[in-house]
Image (cartoon, rainbow, N blue to C red; front, side, top):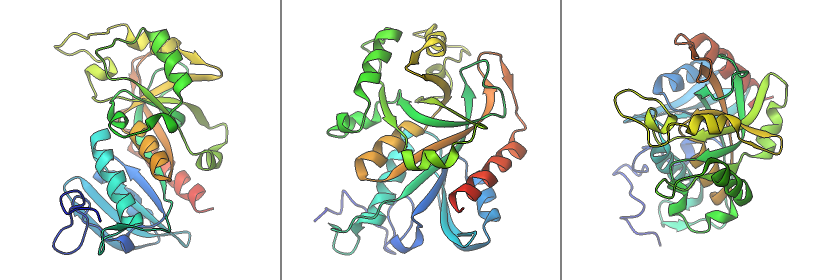
Length: 289
């Protein structure tokens, strides 16, 4: 039995951070960082059956094209993803009454829809990028046993050697997207690539305000890196943990990002919301086709 201190429940029987019960989540869950984006998506549902909010975690479940979907805002960062994926898995695969792991496992589909910065000059602002792999600069997945079973260890080795990765930085890890989810977004309008999940927005993504960088040339190395037919396409802040924890727990995951800035050409689209709404509608249609 899982102890109370490890699986904390609220007085109403909901799980600690998300304030949800098992019956309130669908098998397909759209993850977004911004609670405002979660609200936007829920307004596109044909019907909303419930909405729950606690802190940055806003969850709505409803139907779209007669299929049940959940949208949930995670906030920013892989630390929040650790909370979100573990609590969603607990809702799906742990009996909250007995605190025992269920014998019949439920597999969830996680689709992250987010914003991102391009690391390639030819991937312009307003592009849609689908991540075939995600590289984590955050180190979070290394706190779990047997991470080698879900990571691309050869890619990691080549990446560390190419970049001259410093020993005092967190070890980067690389995890694949779900092939089945990836196949839903095969059209040429979706750029396929490799993203990096950074543990911050400024220094970890090579931005300089008042603090100098420990590795000022890192972004140039990332721009030049290739592995087979793969190249690093974009920065964001959550995908590596979503991919890693999903594979460890038997779920599927995919990230699709709208490029709102190009770090090479220095272009940006601060008024990206109409473009994001276009992407959201396409994602909803493909998930429910």
